[in-house]
Length: 120
Length: 145
Image (cartoon, rainbow over all chains, first blue to last red; front, side, top):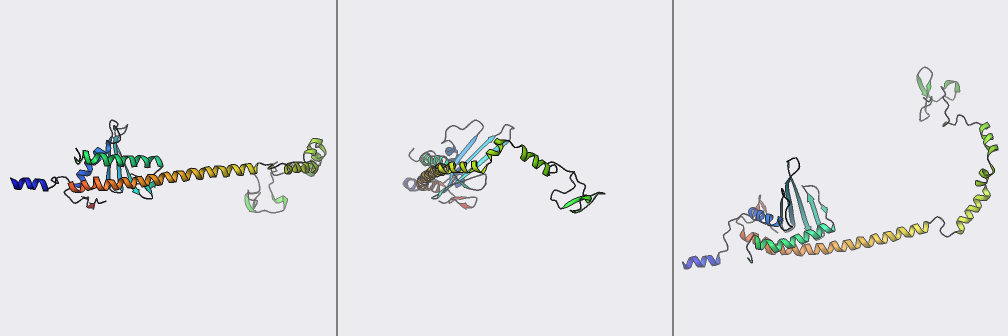
């Protein structure tokens, strides 16, 4: 019994998820940071690694065809680069940079609480 | 159809053959057109020069042209070149100022972005690493900061 209690105190929460699963959970919560998603849309926003951030949307068009758009941001000291659907990168304009910074800050506030239960 | 080709190097010989322009008029199938100046003769020139009105002549007289030049030169910036140059320079200064401001704002946003991702690294990415059971590998790629 003592051994079990001791063990439960020093051993961190059981690692039951893969990194991919954790990113998927973060992406779902991240997609809700920007307000309600329109009906028929699915939105994900997540941090792939420190410098790479991904915005992904899926929806069904007027003809019933599934559509998707992946936007990848690379945060550098020299600027913020953006590429959509594996097209070439280009620097974002002021408004988009401002929105991304706000989104990252929101991500840092919400993900630890909602995905990892920190401070809950 | 004109007998001479557009670039004046060929002409049509009666019978359908073509060859270099031959100065012999009898070899040309000549179709005169007003554009080619076919109707412009010395007689026409004489007629026009004799029938120009007094006003027509005055407008192009050397005397009036000299007066016109003098009037232009006496004005400061008669063609508005100086004003136009100043306008361009002013616009350039405004553009430069706006661009500099934009650049400064972008640099500030990048600085904020770097602070934000540093925070992500120490919070979300650290938590992700603690909770994952696969050493941060996704598709064989290490998802490290």
